Image 1 (cartoon, rainbow, N blue to C red):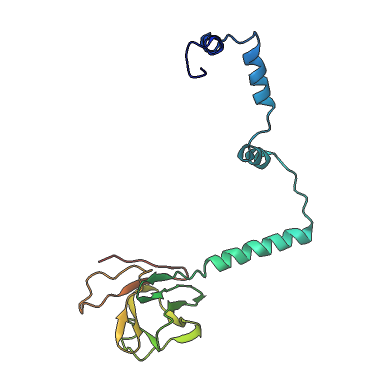
Image 2: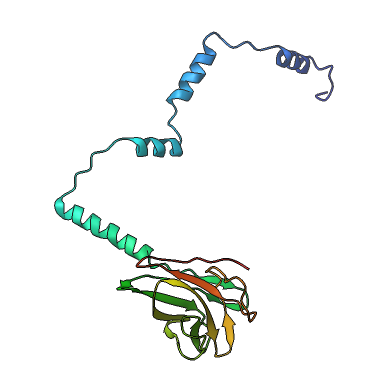
Length: 200
């Protein structure tokens, strides 16, 4: 009998549910007041906290420590080492750091090659001699060499295990290499250093 629409109780309930409901006066205002009183979300509270003005009291020693920390961050930022990894190949990188020494600037070349037995640097600044500038392994797979260079634009490549010339994928590529070898480019300015060059 409960499944039948002839049941008077079911008919009354259905009729009551079909009637339109009109909210009591002030219902919308009460709902909106409750919404306004709800605590703001975490992102809103965080943004409001960040925007509040604050007074910072700093002792001379604290100011000196903050200045030293900022100077350290700037120095470390100029020493960045960019690593690039490829599947099946050793990750490679070259970091260029300038330390002006008169007319020469010290350029630090870095290569990450954990599988390499030996790494050397070859470039047009030393006649492309693959044995003349061996790099030193300083950590697991990290090879490094400092070279003093006069201002100018130079091409270079890493020589891995005495025979394989490898361009630095994190540096600009040289345009129009005569021997088909991939070379990278570094530009040394008078005191300030930057990487520059074209791409193949």
